[in-house]
Image (cartoon, rainbow, N blue to C red):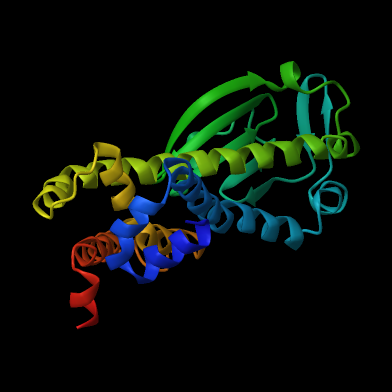
Length: 259
């Protein structure tokens, strides 16, 4: 079955799951999982990045007109003012009044900071307002003498490549997380498939769980993309209830469902 057919049945016809399992090759099932991961990553990573870049008129405008002027002199970064540029959960944080920016200045639920003090550059991951420094370098070791706004413009292609890598990693992480959840759910569902008379191998049950979990995955992605309008814990519970409804509906015959 095609990707569109799998998606349509996953969302609207759970009684067709077992027929779809039989008619769909493993390769197409894997492509389906990748496609869903791409859709979720577009919502949670790509669109926020595009919106942020569009909002400040592109990187060239940002570097030459919007952010404060800066220059590296005598191995130290000097900026005319402090700023925090956020693009899809990634922050470029500059405060040259500090030699090394304290972690206490950083906050967020799941944010990655690239911090620039006057003497030290650091990468810091902030989760639930708890900061964990990944690495640090001296400014003099990573930025050449005289580096300023104009030279930053020359790095725009590198920035776009970095954003593309970030998107690819988002697809991989989303896919891995969803598969892990379905792997755990399959441990509960496998006995049910046997009772229903389906002779599925272990990973067949994982695929079955993924079909039943598709709507939950998309709803969680929409919730993330909209800034968690529903608290994540509540949304997770809703997602589990939706999965529960779909997986049990898949074991009803189509005849019973129509009745």
